[in-house]
Length: 190
Image 1 (cartoon, rainbow, N blue to C red):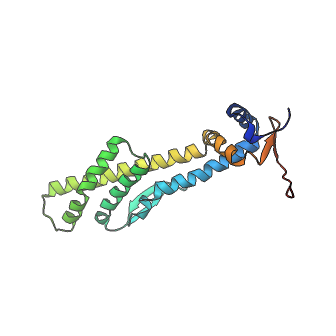
Image 2 (image 1 turned 135 degrees about the vertical axis):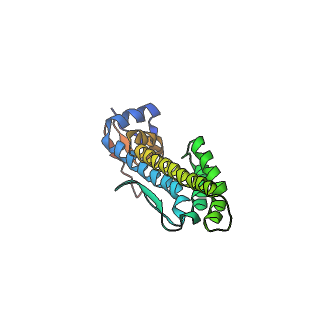
Image 3 (image 1 turned 90 degrees about the horizontal axis):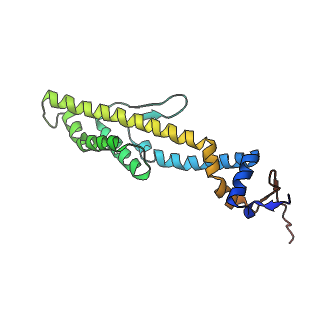
């Protein structure tokens, strides 16, 4: 087959080349990982700013907890979860409603914790349980979402999804015989 520019290939020809060529798969996988960095920036944009929150996602293991004065930070954490959801879908509708409920009560919980509001012990314990269980539920959803994002961007499917974008960006830099890819040589004096 005669060599053709990558930019001249149809979508089907690109897909066929992708299935045959390791270089192309590697370049698309690299591009997917660059895209993952941007997605992760969005993922941590709000959560990463919550004071008192200590966390790790991925290796060497997932954990998330608050340092001292947890009552001070629940409101910020739940707000960060809501803001994150507005940028990307992380929580199910059920979990998001639970987060919104806890967010609406977090300032009151803080006031009760420090004695600025008086409520019964049972009501306080119920409120504290709401904060803790909602935090745990949100935390587990965040871990699951992070893992799903990471799994996708390291997958062959993510690399394949980058094919058209890579070809648009580099279609005039490479040509192919249908199996192999060759870097085009430009005449710098032309």
